[in-house]
Length: 130
Image (cartoon, rainbow, N blue to C red; front, side, top):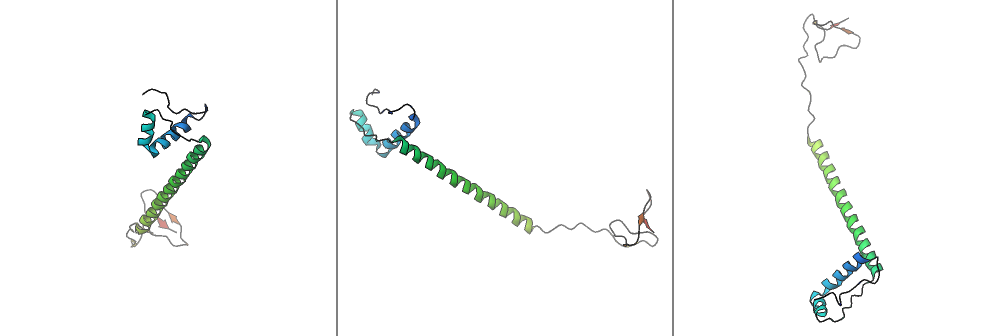
């Protein structure tokens, strides 16, 4: 089989559009298109590049919108799962140190001093309130 009778585009700027149009027409009835090509009969390709370009653009935009919606749903599902996980975790309370006072010492570490007292400490000595 030679290149004679193979469809050609009618301009020099729509090569890709024509290839897609030929593929679409061929795949609608491949047996008939193949038979016509083998018998060198005229195949009515009936390709309108402007319409096909618009269809391709619309398809791309539709697929992009669907993909973005899917991405948004996945992000929201992750956000909800994270919130549920965060909410189900009981807050971890820090362990409280022994808060009993020694008779002559000031407040122990971790125990709040009274509002009116000042804590003074020296290195190596327990804090004292005055």
